[in-house]
Each structure stands twice: as C-alpha cells, then as structure tokens.
Length: 467
Image (cartoon, rainbow, N blue to C red):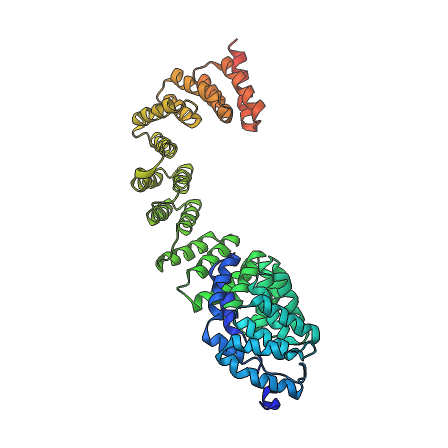
C-alpha cells in the first residue's frame, strides 16, 4: 500500500453506533443498561457499520503516530484479511506486532477486535495506543465508544473530553459526551454537550431529544417545550414526543395545553392507561367532569387487567368534586370491567363508594345502607363503612342509630376525630349540648382547628344557658 494513500484515509464516523445509542435514549427515558447493550449488539454485526469502521484505519500524519516502511508492509499484509477473515487478520497482526511498534498498529488491532465484539481486548489495545501516543484522537474516540457501550460513563467522559481537548470536536463526540453525562444524571454539562452537538448537527433528532430531556430534568420547561415543537413537527405520530411535551406543560402550570397533547396521543391511537388517567385528572381538576369521566372510562377499557386502585381513585376524585353522576358512570364502568376478578377488599371499597354516591343524591340510600351493614358484618373494623352508616341514619332522622355507628367508628384511632365530631353534631341537633361538649373538646385535643374551636365555644355557651 502506498503510504500517502494510507495517510489520506478519512477517520471513522461511527454514525450508526451513535444513532442506536441515541435512539435508546429517545425511546425509553431511563432505559436500563441491558436494553442499551441489546441495541448496540445488533450494530456490531451490521455490514454498513463494519465497512465504516474498516474505513477508519488510515493515518493522519500531521497529528497521529508515524509508521515505518516495515510497519506499512504489515498493514498492507493485514488489510485484505480484515475484509475477509477478521480472526485471521487478528492472528497475523498479533504475531507481527512488536512491543515498540507504532501506536497505529495497536489501534488497528483494537479495531479488528472491536469488530469481533472482543471489547475487553480492544480496550487494552486502544489504551496501549494512547499510552504510546497520548494525542491519538481516534484512539481516544474509540475508547469513549467502548466505555459508553460498557456503561462506564466516567471513563467515557474522560475519553471524549480528551479527544475534544485534542481538537477532535465533532457532533458525534459532543453528542455521546452529553449521553454519558446524562446517564450519570449530571444534566448541566450534558446540556452543554448536547447544545454543541446540535449546533454542529442541527438536523440530528437524537441530540435534540437528549437536550430536551436535560432541560426538562432541570425544570427549564419553556426550553423543553420549544425543542419538542420541532420534534413534533418532524414526527407527528411519535407519541413519546407528545407525552413529554404534555408533562412539560404540566410543569409550566398549563394543564389544558397538556390535555391537548394527551388528546393528540389518543387521536393517533397510542394512549396508555397512565396517559388517559392523567388526562382524566386534568379534566377533573379543571371542573370538566364529563370529559374526565370519558377519559377515565377509556383508561379502564384499554386494560381491564390493570390494578383496580387507580380506577377507584378516579371515581373517588370525581366524588370529592361533587360530580356524582360522572362518578357513578365510572363506578359502573369499573363493575363491567372488573367484576369477574375483584377480590373481597376491592369489592368492599367499590360498594362503599357506590353507597356514598347514592347517599349524596338521595337515590337508593336504603339499599346502600343494607350493603354497608353487610360490609360491617364482614369487617366490624371498617371505619369508613361505619362512618357512612352514621351519616345515613343522621339523614334519615334516626339519631340513636347514627350515634351507635359513630361510637363504633370512634374506637378506631384513624376515625376517632371525625366520628366524635359527627357524634357531637348529632347531639347538638338533639339539643343535648352538655353531652356534645366533651366530644368536641376531645376532638380539639387530637386535632386542633379554629372552626371547631369556635363551634365548641358556641356549644358551651348554649350548654350554660340550659343549666
């Protein structure tokens, strides 16, 4: 081989590797190292990657180690084997490689081993190359690649930083440096690296997404939203981008803009249980119960095998906001989807919720009371059911029965305050002010509140007037 031709060979770009690493970041925020390993494994066997890698064995005589004529002959002997028989190329080069050989030969051996996925051996060869020639930029670059693939991010940072110090700054080096910093959750230098990568390669989606994640992690939500505008315009069917921007809008306290994004994800058919529940929560918080109930119901339909806790919480959220018809709608949907595989605890919780809803609108309260009493028979320590029964009999004008259930609930520590307060209110309605005072005082001892303090003063005043 002519040395001048060898000197003019262009360095390896490694673009395929970069793309896979960045896509692993884009597709799964917080992807496990094993997933990254699986993604990069497929690349090492890709014919295009191999051709690109082989193209990087040249020499830049101005900044890289010199080779003797004898070493050029070794390279000429090995090069045909590198295209046909890598194990044989490795065997021949090892035999001919002397300890004091040029770092170019160590670099070439490292590349052959790298292509065969012998990363530990390649790492040693590249380290030997930079040991002999500390300003060997391409060797530092490949060290960085190996360290990224092995999830050794501190060493990857050291290698890429050294490459950049040597004047080898390019979009890929900056991008992978940003990836390594982000993997260590060091988002400020990661952001700086990604910005440099994006400056050099403005059309690179992976760097833009990496930068977006970094600014999002630093709660720079406006920057993140602007970056995602570009990504969404390029890839309108990419649900991850819509979802990330939705959470960015939530961070900016713009929930209805976030809802628009969640609805967009629904339109492209890529909603998840989580995204639909979040959409329902937004609508419920914004006073749009019909839209909330629809979102919750779609979430239930999407996966009837999901844990029941979140659908129940959705119905309870609507109940707390006074959206009784919509809460009933969600509760009915829960019945349809979960009846076949609800356990006893979940069934009791749903029955209590439905009883509370019936009592709220005055429809079916007698039937609800029967259900609640059955629940209490099964579990005498169900404080919530006891409280609901107390409220039911208070509304029905049966204070003695209400007091009976409040007293039982008050024996449970978690319900003592509310049960004694409700009990006292029943007594006040009956004109038994003196009996209500000790209950209110105990309530204040356990959980002081200004409104209860004022109420206690009024009841004490009434009690004195009755003496």
